[in-house]
Amino acid sequence: MIWELAVSPNLMGPKPSLELSPWENLPHANPSAWEGESNEHCGVYTFRGEKYRYLTIYHDPSVWETSSKKMLKAWGSIVAVMQGGNFMKQKCRETFINATKG
Image 1 (tube, rainbow, N blue to C red):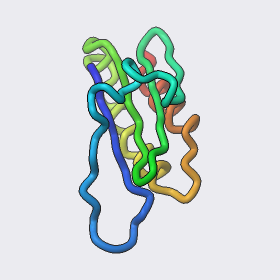
Image 2: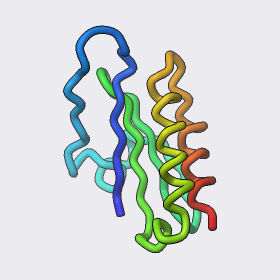
Image 3: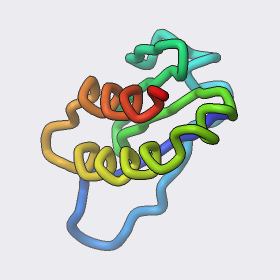
Image 4: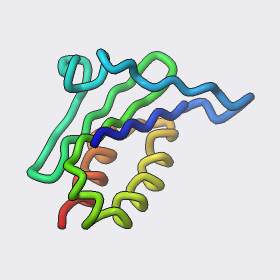
């Protein structure tokens, strides 16, 4: 499974129309543009674009079966970190990797 979260660090003004990465720009196709780490459960990658910040997760569907509640909680905490003034990419990746551990 592949998930991508896109956020805007600009919290003022009208809500932006968030654009997801085209298939050919995701980490599996363009690994040099992304920072990432993985374990036996998933791979998590971050990218800071000109307008948006991105987090992409790859995992086996079985991970969702065993870790869905922790993964949903991780999504919520990651959004706040990604929108903050200091995009702590490694913290975002670690949060999600920890959520997918059995």
